[in-house]
Length: 304
Image 1 (tube, rainbow, N blue to C red):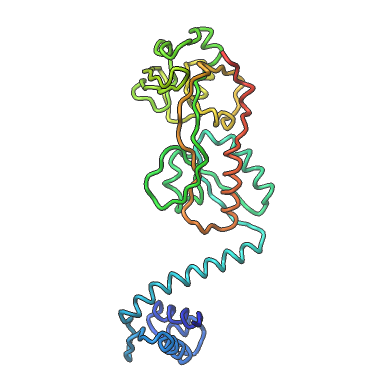
Image 2: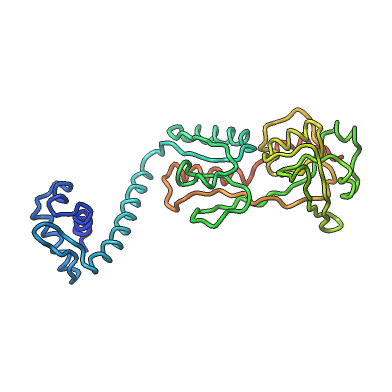
């Protein structure tokens, strides 16, 4: 099968006439007509009904057009990607990321653009990055379950949460020795309900539930961390992200260190399996470095 003939047929359908297609292809109208006729001969079917004024697809022609258009578009995309692979990657990559990743992401992306100086990375900080993929951004880093969609998902892992408090708070209110003790303490809540929530903690005695309350709650891990560091209560924070939050000079202490809670699934998402090289490079870079996010905050944490 001659792909040039297939492409010519597609252009005739898109242009609406042999003459218009010939103008776009910069070919004689007779050559375009012969090319489509030869394709029909090769296939053994009539693709177009011709009149003196217009053309129309036959039923067989319509079915062939739909499939051929997809195939040629895929071939064009493959050709573009192959050509890009031979060049140094360049252009803009747009990324959406949760606000609490801002500090760590700035360091990682600084390293990335030093390795690829012709790529520019533009970051949008939002907890709703998945909604922007395919429109405003190329890649999103998201936490939590994803609604059913056609997005391509690369799972980074599930976060593990632990309890932390500042030394000043524990000196003022005392150190909890059991899960039940938490009910008598102030908690800084992540997305609490009117100052209340229930923590599910797993430790030596299995899984225990405790209702906690506190005067502060927020929808940002960064906010919860800063409030805990400021001595306003005990917080349940993802240990994997502590090294990704902007540094604080206030030492943090682990509370009930034998207890953990399972947090949200962390994922990288994008819209297409066939990514431009610049986007694929950044996706792979982020996947590698976010999974191995070093625990730089360990020096701030002391067992209580």
